[in-house]
Length: 225
Image 1: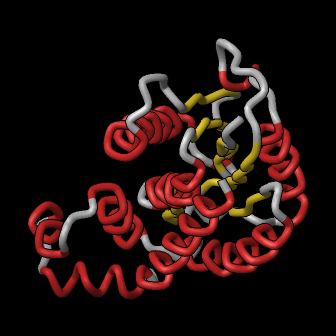
Image 2 (image 1 turned 180 degrees about the vertical axis):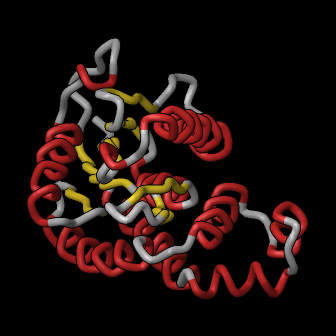
């Protein structure tokens, strides 16, 4: 049986998001799921599902794409902002973000709903995200291969640190760049900024390093299939 990937995620500190903003943020997240499926996964079945209001799962039939999907989800959320107020009523702007675990393994049973399904990929992903809540990690994975787990989780710790520091504009640009595979000139036109500004956002977001990681991940997952 071919391996799949399961992504499990939850929005970090969702209770801090004002009620009036939660619906719009969830709608943006749902729209990104549609875009990711149409542009990247091309799965006839909807591979994404939101549950408990602030959590989600996805079944990725091509596991070599799972890391890209995880980074796309986090970049989309990092591009969404919300305000909170302190006791002094000063307004702050926060980026949304998500904790994401990726499990790669078998799919033993596919239920009517994703959360009813089972298999090693689901078990890896579900157990991992529970441990991440305790350790504070926001991007991690587990596969059947110990050498891959060790290599990738070292790289993912650095990648997660970088993602958590993206500005709203950097995250917006990176999401569109990774999703559409557009040139910097095309992105500049779409976002109505200069091409050097697009280059700066991608550079500050460490996009070259992230693309190296994505390419390495795809190669080793395909090799182990």
